[in-house]
Image (cartoon, rainbow over all chains, first blue to last red; front, side, top):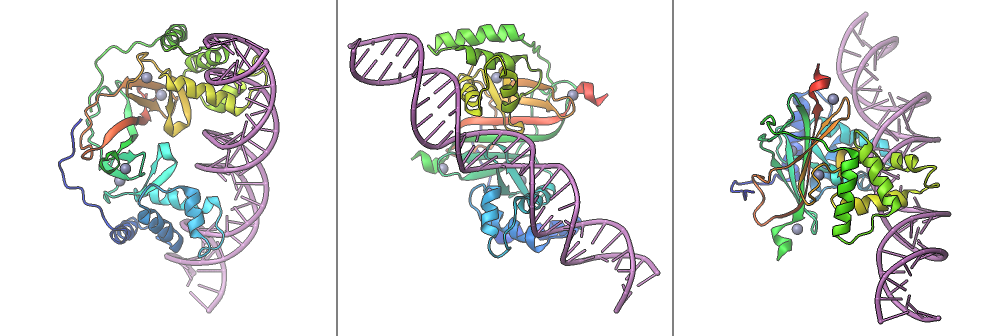
Length: 149
Length: 149
DNA sequence: ATACAAAATCTTATGTTATAACGCCGCATA
DNA sequence: TATGCGGCGTTATAACATAAGATTTTGTAT
Ligand SMILES: [Zn+2]
Ligand SMILES: [Zn+2]
Ligand SMILES: [Zn+2]
Ligand SMILES: [Zn+2]
C-alpha cells in the first residue's frame, strides 16, 4: 500500500470536452450534439453519475429521451475510452487520463462520493496460467482524507 | 503481470459447507435451512450464479420464494465473507479462501464463465493521500487457457 | 441536385436486478 | 406471560438495462 507521490492534476470539463472531440475526430467517429451533451454532463458531474440521472438532465432541452438514448451515448463514449463505467455503483465518470486504452483504477469515497482515477499499474500477481486479461475492473471504496476529519 | 506459481486447490461444495457452518457457529449467527440451502446452491454452481437463478432453484422445495428472501440470505452470507458478489456480472460465488476478511481478486473467463479466485496482494500503488480503503473490487475478464485453444 | 446506403436516433415494449415496507411467527430471556 | 428480536413471507415498486423495429439524418456516389 503506497501513498501516491505524483502530481495528479484534474482536467476541467472544458479541457475534457476538447480532448474528447479530438479523439473522436481522430477515429473518424461523429461527435453528435447528443453525444457531446451527454459527455459534458458526465464531465461536469463531480461524482459518478447514473444513467437515469443523465436522462433527467437531458430534459427538456433534448425532448423526452428514453433509456436507450442515453445508454447508446454512454456505450459510444466508453467504447472510445472517454467515459468509464463504475461497476459497483452503476454509474459513469469522464476519463481523466485522456489517452484511451488504459486500465482504470478508482478510489471512491463512500461519504462524499468523490472519485479519484488512476492508471493501474499492470503488475498483477498470480494470474492463472494461460489466462489472457482483456479488461479489468479495479475499484477501491473507503473514506477520503477530507471526510476522515 | 506474473503467472501464478502456487498451488490453488479448490474445495468441494461439501468442504465449503462444513467451513461455512463452523464460521457461522464461531460468530454466533444462525445457519438456517434457507441460508444453508442458498449457500449450497452457490457453492455447487461452477460459475457465478445470479440471484434470480437462485430463486428458481429454490423452488419448489422452498415454496415460492420472492426476491427479498434470496437477497437477505446473500447479504447474510456475504457479510460473513462466505460468498462474494461479482460486481460486473451481478452474480455470486462461494468464497474459496475460507478465512473471511480477505480482498478477493477474480479472473473470469468470458467464454466458459469459469472463475478463479485469488487473494489480492495488498500492494496497491498510488493510493490518494489519506484515503482509507474499506473494500476493494478487483475483477479481471478475459479468456482462460482452455478456451484459448 | 438526386438517389442511395449507412449511421444515428426515436419509440415501444419488455427484461433484469434490487429494495421498501409491513406483518407474522418462533424462540430466548426476564 | 410479557417483551424483544431475529428470520422470513408478501406485496409492491424502484432502479437499471436491452431488444426490435420505425424513422430521420448524413455522407457519398451518380
Ligand atoms: Zn480513464
Ligand atoms: Zn470523502
Ligand atoms: Zn474469497
Ligand atoms: Zn474459459
